[in-house]
Image 1 (cartoon, rainbow, N blue to C red):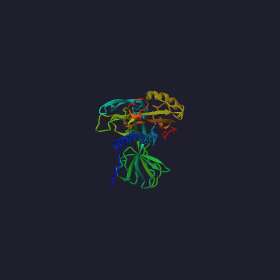
Image 2: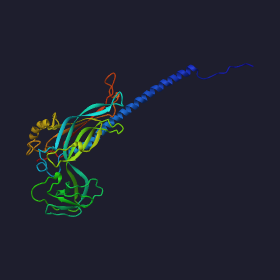
Image 3: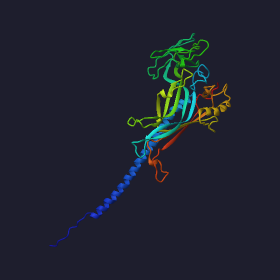
Image 4: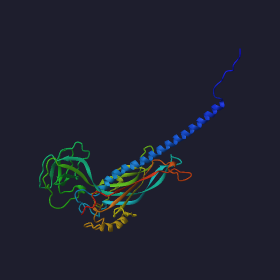
Amino acid sequence: MTHRPRNHSGFSLIELVVAVLFVGLLMAGMLQIFATSIQSFYSQQETLGAQRMSRLAFDQLSDDFQQAGYMYPDRSTPPWMTGTAAQKTFLINPDVTFTAKRPDDANPALLVDETITSDEVVFLRDMPLHYTTTLSADIGPIAGVTATLPIKADPAATDPVLQGDIAIVWDQKFEFFFVNADLGSGNTVTINPSGNFVSNQWLTGANGEVFRDHKAGTLVTFVRPNQMVRYTLQPIALDPSIPKQLVPCLVRQQSPYPSNPGVAINWATVNGTVLAENVSAFRLDISSDGGSTWTRAASWAAWKTALEPKLKAQNMNGFQGMDINPMWIKFAHMVFRLDINSRTTTRRTDFNQATATPTRVYRNRQLTMMLTPRNYALGL
C-alpha cells in the first residue's frame, strides 16, 4: 500500500509576526487619527462655547444699552438729577486693569497672575417690571395729591410693585403716575401724580391729579425708574474646588440712583450677575457721525472734552455740556460700538501653530455689536 503525505495548511510563524506587525501599525495610525479627532472636537466645542456665551451676554447688554436714559417723565433738570452730582448718569472708564489667576501651563496645580485690561461702562435706565394688568373700573379726573388706580391683581407677576415705581396707563389719553405705597397682593394702586418718591426728591409746583378719563380694561404697566447699570470685567472664583483661581468674567450690576447727590454708588457692595466667563476684553467706542470716525480717549474727562463740541454741533436744544445736561445720552445722535473678546476655558498647543514649537495659548474670538439706543434723537 502506497503512503501519501498529508497536506498541512496554515500560517507560518513569520507570516503571523508580519500580520500582527501590520495590524499594530494600522491600529496605531487609527488611534492617532481618533485622538486627533477627539482633540479637535473638544477644541471646537470650547471655541463655540466661548462664542455662544458672548452672544448671550450681548443679548442682555444690548437690551440695557438700547434703553439707556429715562422713559417717563423728563428728568433732565433738577431736582431730579444734576450735573454736579457725584454719581454721573453715564460714564466710561477706559482701560481698567485687574489681576486674574490661571493654572500654570507646566504645572496646573500652580496658579500664575495675568493682567486683564477692559472698559467699565455705567449708565442710567428705567427698568420695566414684569407686572402687566388692566384697570378694573373706569376712572376720571381726581383732584388732590393722592389718588388710587383700581386694577386687576396679577398673580403671575414676578416683580413686586414698590413705592417710587411708575404706573403707566396705556390709552389715547396716556398718563403716568408715581406709586405712593407698595402694592403687595392688593388690587388698588395708591398713586401720587406729582410727587417723586425716587431718591426722596420732590417735584415742585401745583398739586398733581388724574387729568383724564380712562376706561376699564385699559392696559397698565409699571416701571422702576432711575436704576444705574454697570458693566465691567471682574476676577471671579468660579470653581469652589480651586477658590484661588480667578476667572475674568463680564459682570452686570444694578443699583438705584443715590438719594444723596454728594455720594456716588459704592459698586464694591453691590451684588452682580456673571453674564460670561473667560472674557479677555470688553471695549466701547463712540461715533457721532454714523460710524465714519470713532472717539476714544484715555479718561472719561478727555472723552467729554472730545465729545462735547460734536454734541453742540448737533444743535440739541439747550445743550451746554455733558455735566450740565446729565441726560445728554437721551438726545444725542450717537452710535456705540461694543466689543467682547471671549476665550476658551483652557490653553492648548493646537491653538498656536504659528511657531515650530507651539506653546499653550487661549483661542480668542471677538464679537462686535453696533448700538443706537432707541430713545436717542428726541428733542429736549
